[in-house]
Length: 272
Image (tube, rainbow, N blue to C red; front, side):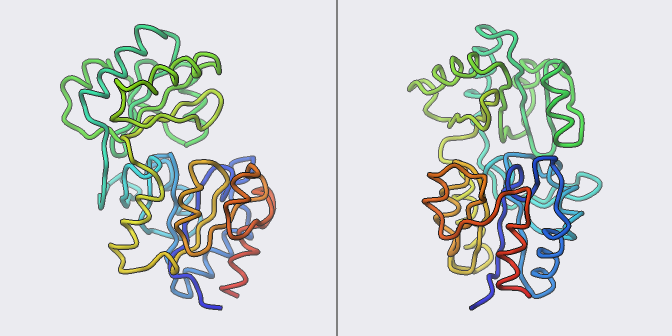
């Protein structure tokens, strides 16, 4: 059994348990794999900054696939960012999205992400809930003005609102007017927006090219719909036990859920 050279893992619902913690066995398994020559890559809807504390606990300083594939980069304790690949949202489209949502759904939380920066119009309950999960606070600014004047890349827009409002916004963004973006729900109350064509799989494909690897060199772990293409691309795609049935059916392996030692059990087969 050949050892994978590249290990990829989603974060929430996969490498973290339901208490947003790393299991001790997961840390042990990842560190053993890295000691034996594998590279560990975190792949998430989060920013690099939002993944950094997890990377440090795992003992890795490798590349991160952020914003569901819109940004591939490294970061550090000082938020210094080394960008390898990026696919930002067109600024005019981002401004149109912000304007229509602010006007038609004024209670929705609009969040704009650029590199390691997180910008919001106000720091209310939705924003505080998100900050508690990712471990840092947003920058409050006038989003309309920032979008009009800044030249920084826009890697992701996140909309947080009640489920019915998210349904309405999602329907609006699926029309041809917004063909330059891809919008999808990561929760009933969360709508993730990236540039059209951006996925974890497309980022993985480029990372394999950059590292002179093949898909057969990679093993990937995931639990949700935005992980499925990544699981298909990797030589070994592993679905968590808590994943929906369609994700399990599309994976090569199914391990235990994220509250147990499923990742360790798989890695231990290759890196004992």
